[in-house]
Image (cartoon, rainbow, N blue to C red; front, side, top):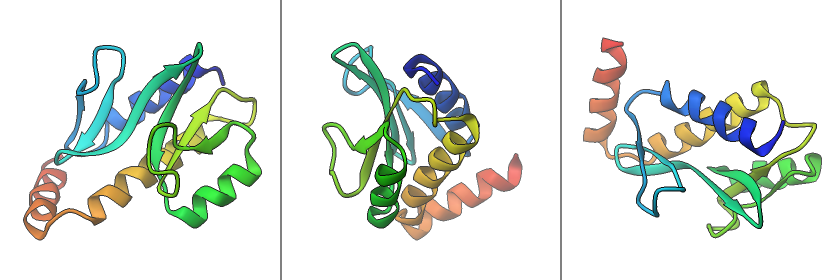
Length: 126
């Protein structure tokens, strides 16, 4: 997938997640997806290469970087807990779906009990 495709597909996946909200806290060209005000995905571009950043468990992130040439430590993020996904032949929709959903779930696990209840109620309504 190209960087454009990765950003488009990942954004479509993120948009469908419960209580996911799109914002631009870092400027117009940097879409950020949050759940309950906690970031789980960011899209950007560096040196003409488009990419997305996703939260990831450190051991899983290390494994992904070993397997996929186009997955790196999170650009401009905590290198242990974030990954950056750039264009590459190995990147496909199934992988992106898994990684975006995993990032979302990692963030929702850290929500307060009250926030989790709000999320649970919203999910039940959908």
